[in-house]
Image (cartoon, rainbow, N blue to C red):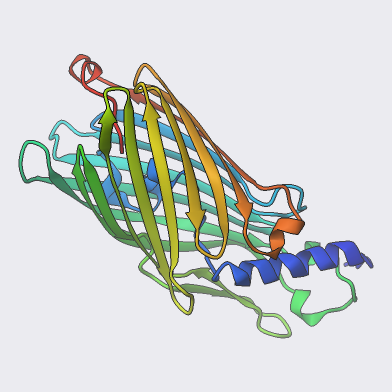
Length: 312
């Protein structure tokens, strides 16, 4: 193995590690447009569109930093012939410097109908994460560091999770634990290097819709994230829908960031969204923001085409 003296890269790695700790050891990917990407954390959300739907999202965090987090997500959901049952699929690629996580997850949800407007979906999620972190590829400030003598390549980590999603045209509430098992990967090397592959996260989220006028609606949302040995983190957004076509909003994430969100709706089927975050920590001096692009598409039946747009 050839080591290189590279102070700039070394300091970059150090800052990324410090920033990760400052972000409350949040391991699962975070999303600014979480209310349009709920299925990745809550299997009970599958089927809530009541149509065959697809969603793709790309998140580039801390742009300008080499090796900064990059997350790519693809989700789909489909109602079954029994309209109480729905299935979903999630593909997630999450990379931070040399560390790579690729996840493939299947969702199952069952709907309990309370009345014509309100229902509760109960969901199960199962799948795996393929973890890779080749320690031999790192450029080190000092050579022969025993912590970087091994490698973690293609480690298969299965897991499962659960969720609830209460839905009404005027509000929603979701509670989920997408990974119930706490998994750790170890590797034989001089210092028995290990890494926490899966950390249990708890998510509580909700939102409401207010009709301000015929052409203007207001939707506040929140998401609370809790994980072991870390403070609670809260995401808050305020969103306005203009003429049933354009969402405009702002967000705030405690001890982390603030930002802005926009989404355009094309004929109730195709949606294109964009968001940008700015750090509220000292990291703001070292990058040019975090960017997300989201695209979703729904294949609706004729009956669904004449209904009002989906708000959650």
